[in-house]
Every structure is written in C-alpha cells, then in structure tokens.
Length: 403
Length: 114
Image (cartoon, rainbow over all chains, first blue to last red):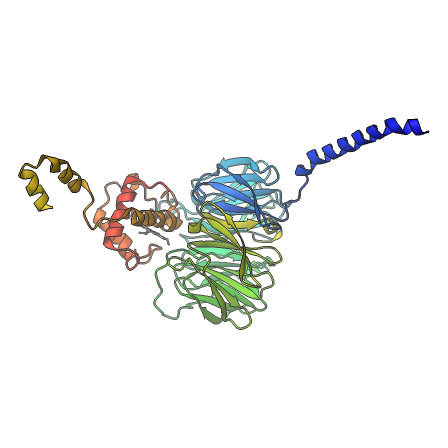
C-alpha cells in the first residue's frame, strides 16, 4: 500500500496547481457591475471607470470627443454605458472590458439622452440638428429620426430647428423631451420603432431648459428659463395637457444674471415635498407634491445648479453656479434649515449618491479631483485624482425610470 | 521709457538691446500669465458651458473665429459686459472688467483651445 501512495502525491499536487492556475486566469473576468460608475473627464474626452465599494479607479477610457455637458445612461444589465457627448457623439462603453464597444457621431451638437423602457432603444436629444434621434442599443444603428419644428432664422440661434432638451424615458415605451426655442413638450410612443407616434404639447412656457420625470414615472416637469415657472405633464392623464406650476415664483423680484443653467435630474422628493432650483435666484424652491403649490423658498449660498436628495430623503445637497461653485450646502428636509456649508474646492460640478446613500461623490473640477463624502458625518472619506471631472454616474441608474 | 529711448539716442550701444525688449514687453497694465490662465479657464469652462468647450455652440451660438469674423468688436465686448436681455446671455459686468473682456474677445477671434 505504502509505495503506491508516493507517486500519487506529486500528481495531486500538480492537479491542485493546475486548478489554482485556471482559477487565477478566470477570476479577472468574473466580476459584477452593480457598484461601478463612470466619471466624465470634461475636456480630455475621457472617462474614469470607478467602483464605489472600494472607492477606487479601475480604468481610464479615452477617445470620446468633446465631453462638455456629457451625460450617461446604462443598459439594463448594467454592463454598458451610453455616453452622450457635446459633439454629437454617442459612445457605447463596455464596463467589463473597460473599453469603447462602439461609437457613432450622430449629430452636430447634442445635450443628453435616454434608454427605453425595454432597453432596446437609445434616444438622443440634439441641438443641431434640433430634434430627437433614436438608435438600436446593441448596434447603434439608426432607428428613427424625429426632427423638431423649423425656426425662423432668428439672430443668435445657429440651429435651424428648435433645440431638444430634457430627454427622458417614460413608461409605455415612450420618450419625452422639450423644445427650447418653440416652447413645447413632445411625447413619443416608440412601441412601433419604425413609426413613432408623437403627441405635441404647445405653449408650455418660454424656453424650457431641462426636465425630469418623477421616479414613479408619472410626472414630467420642465423648468422654464424664459419665465418664472415650470411646465407639468401628468402621464396618467396626458389628455389633460400641460399645466403651469410655480407660476411667477419670483413675485417680481429682480432676477440675477444666470451664469449656468440649473439641472433637473434625479427627482428630489422627500415625503410630500419636492425641491427644485430657482432660476436666477439664490433659492431652492419647495413644492407640495400633491397640488404642486410652492410651500417654501430656502435661501442658499448661490444660484443652485443640482438639487439632489440623499436616497433616504432626509438631506438635500445643493451645488452652485459661478462664482459660488466652490461650495456645497446640505439642507435638512424636516426643518428646511441649512445644516452645513461645505467647501470641497474650486468648481464643484456634480454630485452622485451611492444607491443606498452612505456615500456621495463630488466632482471638483478645478482641483482635478473627485471627493467621496460621508453624508451622515459630513466628512470626507476619500479623494481620487481626475482630469477636470464633471458628471458622475453610477450603474444603479440602470433601474431608475427617467434616468 | 522716454528716458531710456533718450539714452539710446545718446548712443549707448549696450542699451540698444534693452529698449527694444522693453518696448516689446507688455505694457504695465497687461494681464499676468496667471491671470490669463484664469481667464482662459473661465472662457473654456464657464462660457463653454453655454457656447461649448470648443466654442462650437450649445445654448449659446458658435463663437469660432469664422463666425465672429467681420463682427463689430465693440459690440461683441458690449454683449459680454452687458449681456443680451431676453436671451440666456448674461451680463458679466461685475465679474469681469473691460480689459479682461477685451482679452477674451481676442482669444475668441484667434480660436480657443480647451
């Protein structure tokens, strides 16, 4: 018996070694994407792939063109990011292979986009040529082209068609967007991709600049730049048309010059209240979500750009336009008091919470860094270097209606 | 400066090179390199948020050398200082002075690299 065992030992060792080796070879390919994110490096045309479980950078992906004002949506399997660039580029990025999968330049000047309810379509809102273009999410082949109305060639406007803003996906395989120059909301039913069905809403107000969809997919709310107020469409009763809310919220006060358009993104609802940036005022407006009446105006340090709720909705985080863009303020949603004014650094451009809200990531453009804060202790947890970072997008957005 | 030129006229050979550089150097009120860097960043980032990082347009019109060629310089400067009421172009007076605006218009006319 004994002599037999001896030759077996090296054999099993070899087997073990081989097993270990193959495990090593496989493990890099085995990873999930639920804790990944994309940080836009504005200017250098690159993206940082990050992971929020360990607050680290995984890769830099280059060659995405002009990424000023770029935004990102994710495929439902959270493997691919679709990046909408300023230069009209639509880039599909593979988060697992850490590289560009496909890229098309679909327009001259675009502003953002959305992924359809079924995940099959990507819509891009364009300034030039004004309108919406729809693509297959696998191949990026064009599926539909929905041009906006032609404009009289007014001074100062390059686009010959009204510019599309505030593109979101909505339940019922729809895309909604607003038209800056002609003051409209369009709702497009893409059930039959080859023949989109368009519902147009006119006279919604002057110069809608951005829009959002409530996270339940029911209300589409467009912010107006050309007047004080917002335009509201209830998708449970679209036949009722668009209603003007927050009408004349400034009540005749002199509006300040607006150096940066605010953004409406990530529906900021806490309990019965909704929080939105006031245009040209140092205020965050509070609305009653049941009747859309204004209930408060919270004085803040500057003109708000992003007004984002912590996922548990107990805090609202606000960043500001130039010249107050070195600050971030934190509002308590029960008292409407400012509980802290943070000074992360020059040029705070964007904020993104992790899905359960234990971290918030801030891009601090002019410091060349991304900071991770603990929103419960209001302390900084980590700092990652980045090239002029702007938007931060975590893959958890893949499963949010309207994002 | 007049004195130095006078000394050249007096025939001081060694000084000949000096007045030349003095005259070519920026006038005393010119912007420092750090100041120009700050303005360049403002132009690209903040003006760029409406006009595009490469000034190819967005909410605001294209501001490339080709599109600006032939436009009245003073009215361009006035647009930046006073804005255009009724449009999204804000007045920068209070944040930027005449000199800074003039420098930015120079940059726009030459073409801005982000």
